[in-house]
Length: 370
Image 1 (cartoon, helix red, strand yellow):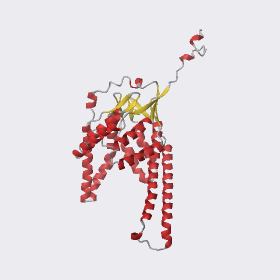
Image 2 (cartoon, helix red, strand yellow):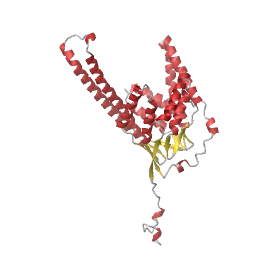
Image 3 (cartoon, rainbow, N blue to C red):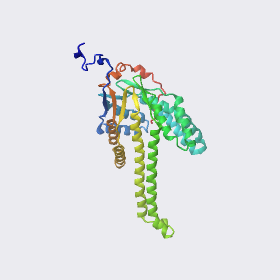
Image 4 (cartoon, rainbow, N blue to C red):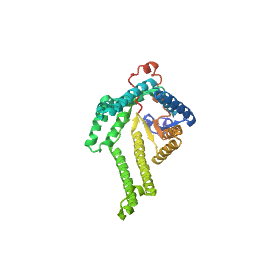
C-alpha cells in the first residue's frame, strides 16, 4: 500500500475515521446609534402623547424593529415582524381590565375580587400567548423562531407552583424561577431545531442564597450605623422632640440609607447576571452552544449610570442608555458553532416563511407589553 496517501502511515486507513468538527465563536454585534434611535424615540413620544397613549403599540413595534435590525450575527441581522394592530388589541384588553379594577375599587374594595381572580386564573394563559407571540414574530435570515409550550404547562408552573410559595415559606422560589426559564427555553425552536436547556436547581439556590447573605450583611451594617447614630440621643435619657431634631441627624440617616439601596441593587444585578451567564451556558441547539461573558461589575456600572443619566436629563438620555445597554449585551454573547458560519444551519429554511404564513397567524396572538 502506498502510505503517501496516509500521513499517519496507518495501514488500516485512519483517514476514514470521523473528523471532529472545528468549533468557532460567532459573536453578536449591535450597530445602533444614539442619534438614529433618538429620532425614532422622540417621534414615538410625541405621537403617543398626542394620541393619549393609543400610538403606544406602533411606537413599540418601531423601537423593536430598530433594535432587531441592528443586532447582527454572522453577517445577518434579526427581524421583528409583529403587527402593531395585534399589540393594540392586547393593550385595549389590559386597559379595560385595569380600568375596571380601579373603578371597582373606587366604589368598594370587595368589587375588585373578580378582577384579582381574573388576573390569577388567566395570567398563565397570557404568559403562554405572549411567549408564542414574541417567538413567532422574531426571525433571523427569514426563518422564524417558534414556541411549542402548552397552556397546561404554563398553568402548572405559573399558577400551580406559585401556590406552593407560601406553603414552603418561599423556599421554592429559586426552583420556581428555574422552571419558568426551562418552560421558555426548552420549548423554543429555530428552523425546526429544538433548543435544549438543562439547568440544575442547585446552581439557582447557590446564587439566591449568596445574594440573601449579602443582603442580610448590608442590612445589619446599616442597622449598626443607624444604632451608632441614635445611641448618644438614647443614652442621654432625654425625650426626643421631633421639632428640634437637627438636620444633620436626618442627613446622616439618608447618607447611610443610600449605600444600602445601592448594595441591594448590586445584589439584584449579581443574581441576574450570574444566572443569565449560567442559563446561556446550559443551552444547546443541536451542536451549537451559547456563551455569555457579562460582568457583574460592568453591568452594575452601566445600569447605575444609565439611571442617573435618565434622571438628571429628565428622560432625554433614555435612548443613549438603551443603546449602551443593548450594545453591551450583544457584545457579551457568542455562539459556539461547529463550522465556518451559520449558512448550512439555516439552509433550506430561509424561503419557507411567506406572506400567507404571516397572515395566517392567530388573531389572538397579541403582545401584552411585557
